[in-house]
Image 1: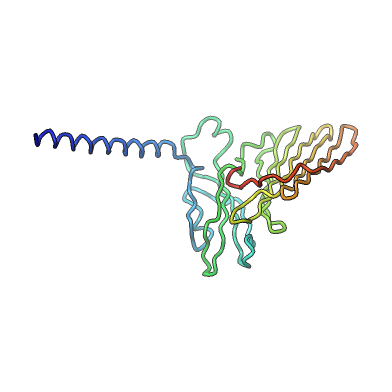
Image 2: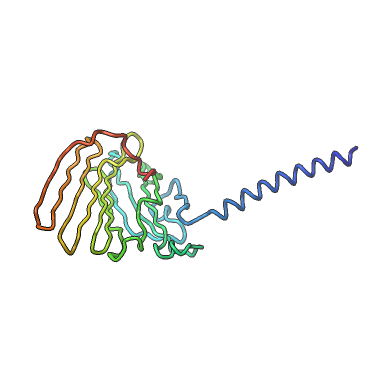
Length: 223
């Protein structure tokens, strides 16, 4: 009787151990550089840059209107990892993160995104599509460009409001370097106002302004 009970208890322990082991293995097998979690706090920017990552862009300004200089940064992975053929072509992952400065001089993480900043090989013949990050009128502006004979560009404007980072404006551009044809769609996500500017093959410019309606703002972490 006691032997049966002992065997049953040992079986349950082994069963739990196996399930936990499988969970750990599954997590390790799915870990990718882009899944890296940025530290929640630190004394300087370098504290937030993980091992095997390098800084490629930064902006240091007051981003949450508390009169303290915050930091927005873009980092790129430099270590080795099991990349697919497609990932080898596109290049190593990049992460955008923003940290707020506190009154004691330290910083705390506000947001991070591994999907917004395109990789170095995703710009086509044009090359690295990351055209830079800047501060403008209380917002962080990220610009991406690429293509070949037909060039494309995306500019995203993010602002911290309602305790989160939201897309408040965006510009989509296409341009043919051979014919001069182009289209630029500039959208104010706060007001719904959209301006579409086109230039045809003959160089004729046309500007149309309309309102697409005020929609729910997109969060940076969802893009």
